[in-house]
Amino acid sequence: MRDGFFVVIFAIFRIAYGFDYALAKLALEFSAAAYAIDPWPCALKNNGTVLYVKTAKCDVLNDECWSVIGATKTELFVSFSGTKSKEQLVTELLESIGRPKHKLHNAGSVHYYFYSALKSMWHSLSAVLNEFVDIMPKHRIVFTGHSLGGALASIASTIFAQNHPQMSNRTFLITFGQPRVGNIEYAMRHDELVAGGSWRIVHAIDIVAHIPMCVERLTRPISCIPFYNHGSYHHGTEIWFPANMTDGDEYRVCDGTPINEDNSCSNAQRFYDINDHLFYFGHHVSNYGDNGCVDD
Image (cartoon, rainbow, N blue to C red):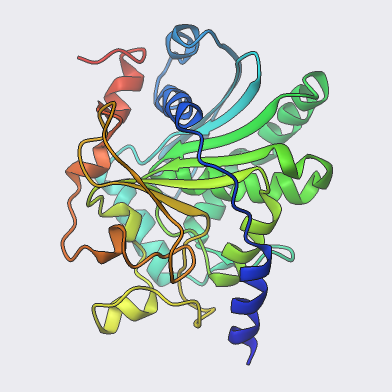
């Protein structure tokens, strides 16, 4: 009965604002900047500025996670770097599978590695963010990231919106190749709290957008369904680019069923590829950021 309750309330609270393609392309620029030792070239290229940079050791291997707060005339971007090594990816997977999820306050549960990585930098990052939000009261707050960075941006946006309900309608999440972050209860609360809009951009057959696997796909080749609160489930609306993501390529707003796990978009694919995870909007995201948002 409890899982059925989640499904009903989830449908009630789903927010469906229009996908902003131009904002998504700008978010990719700031997501790439989070990979760079010097994020300034990416910001300046987009008529923006860098307000704050935070690095922290975020796991048992002492891998570093990076975050950047940047701004344009109308947006505050809070971006997080993605996975930086194969060893870090293995650690993410092992801790997602082998450790219990972390329970958030009144917001479901998220995978331990993602929460732990965000916690390593969130105290100081959120304090600085609050200062800039006060200084720029009309700016939209856009949380963004690629890969692991998308998962950290997801949790950060949820916590921020929960702590600042008056800013919920101008809080956004735009991620690229984001893994599943938490359970169905987390997905429900995230979509309720991040009321500006929550968009998961998926490039073709990007494998990372489909891990950790939901309960159903562990046993049979069907899409996820919102009945198992202990499993993994996506939040936000998938924006699926089935081709190369170059300008003019078609995309789909995946608002079918199951909710947030539309079975007619990337979930319908039977084979996935890591190469599609590396490239978004035609850029190798990490290299693009390292090069100052200029392609090789």
